[in-house]
Each structure stands twice: as structure tokens, then as C-alpha cells.
Length: 328
Image (cartoon, rainbow, N blue to C red; front, side):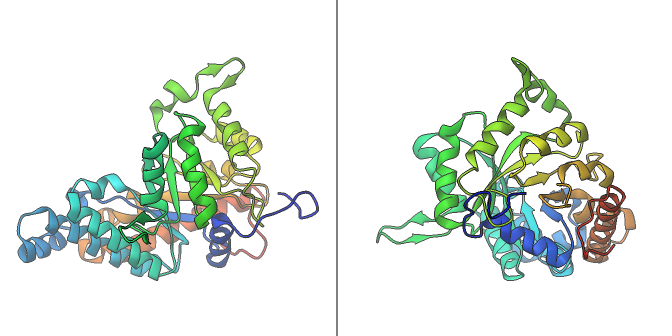
């Protein structure tokens, strides 16, 4: 962690804010808002089909209804939610409108929004992605309007700095952040990410670039506005990446349904137990399936969140990384 006499620190960035909320709730957990129609409780879908008909709007409204109730039951437990844009975009403008309204509701509850959109391109297209999801879109009268009001976005590194710069500009102007895909949690990530370039793996080369991209945006907590996606399913690699990226905040997928447990996530945290947030999607939002009680889906999500928090904090404690004043 940087100390103030080591370098010039910038004003608080988005990860400073995220860390504040993590500390306040003593919960380094993010809930993924990844709706799947077949797993939305049938009674909820039926209600909106009866209201709107068998059309995309009914699905989109059921998604929104589902997540608003989950947010109501969990917003005091977690600092952030992560909507996966693809599941909403499947339903066209109705899905996008429902996504916008769900994001707005989560913001009202004080949650930080991580847009899991994985956008990547170059030039003016990259500018458009950055503006539409992180920043603001221009209007004919030279004013601008935020389309999604998200705080952080996931992006790919494969096109190089040309595809990153547009997002970094918006981060600087609007106090936003990015999570760059470095070592993802899926099994086939090894096909490219683990290939060697000279003596380094590709994910290690990307890690060096991420640390460099963020060097001019380090906030009071010692982390830059350029974060990294580092999965819980590869703990050995995560441990190395934590050393390679000391000023980079980690988004950690792979917990729960993908096989990662609390003990697997500790490698993503610093020795002080900070610098990472662990995501769970299906394990929380569809926890009601294990309880066999669809009517209580939001309560099941709350219970799953509490169990996840206990698992991660217990693992941090066992590794002597639990932050001071945190209680399990």
C-alpha cells in the first residue's frame, strides 16, 4: 500500500469509495444480477405475462421485479451489484429499459454499480462504448445525459491501449473505474491467457499493462481507477497477480457455482485484507431453488449472502488477513 510520503496521491477515486462501503458493511461481496428466464420464479413471470402478454416486456418487467426485491433484502449487506448486460439485452429495448430502471433503484439504495458489459473496440467506437455505459451521451442541444449511471465497467485488453484509453479518459473526467480482464475464472481461459510470451504468461503481461495504465489515477487507498478481473478458480495465479499488481483492485468471479470457495479468494486480497471484491451471481439470486420456496426467493438470497460473507471472512481470518475491527 502506498503511503502519502511516497508519491502524490490523487483525490478519492471510485475504488476509494468502494473500499469505504466495503469497510462500512464489513463485506467484500458483490451480487451479480444475471437473470435467466427459466430460473425466475414462475409466479413472478406469470404475474407480468398476465399484465403485459407473452411479449419481451413481460420478461423484462419480471427481471426488474425479481431484482428489486432482492436488492431490498440485501442492500444493507453488500456494497455493490454487477448487472450482466447480455441477459437484459436479449429482450431488446424492453430489457434495456428494465436494466436502466433496476440500476437506478440500486443507486437509490446506495449501491455501487459494476456494469459487466465486457466492451472492447478502438477509436470512435471505443469512445461510444465508454460514453454510453460509463459516461454521458451527447444530445442535440450540446447537453449530455447518462444512459446507465454505472460506476465501473468490465473491459477486455486484447486490442491493447487503443481500446483502453477512451475508458481511462471517462474514468478521469467522471470519477469512474474499469475492471480489465486479466485472469478469468472459466476453464478455457488457459487456452490463451496461460500461453507464454518469452518467459511470461499472457495474463502476466496484461497484469503489467494494467498496473501501468493505472499509475496516474492512484487514490487515497493506494489503488488506481484501473482494476482487474482475477478469478477465484485459479488461486495460485491470483497470488502471483496480487504481487504483480499492488495498486490494482480485483474483481473476483468464480465463487460458488463455478467452484470457488472462501479459501480460494484470500489470494486476491492484500495482506491487510483489502483490494478485492468477490462476486456471486447464481449462488445468491437463485438460492431459493435449494430452499424449494420460490415465494421467499428474496429471503433465500439474503441468507445466501450472509453465508457467503461468513465463508470469506472466516477464510480471511484463517489467513491472518481479516481487517482490524471486522467481526465474523
